[in-house]
Image (cartoon, rainbow, N blue to C red; front, side, top):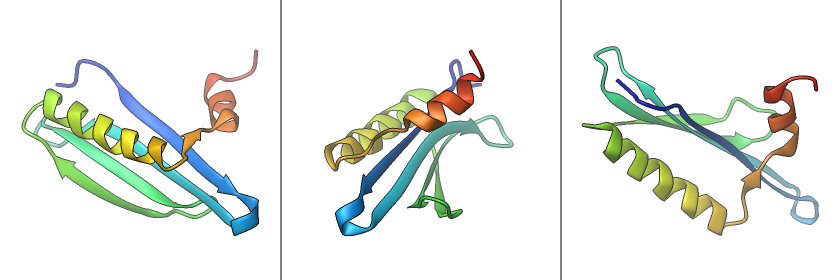
Length: 91
């Protein structure tokens, strides 16, 4: 069982290069209760692609989560303000 919810959504936009990309990470449980890191990426406005990484325990999943997030942040991805507003709801 996963002790805490892990989920992040980041974007990279560069109008000069016609670039609008998203990258999403989450840790979910498999049918058997094992942690699984789910990565989704693609052009903003599309469904994109996804891949799942099965892990033996939550610590391994969190390590992968942080590894992939760090790599994307180094490439210029940042949290989406619009999505954070939509998730928190009206004030």
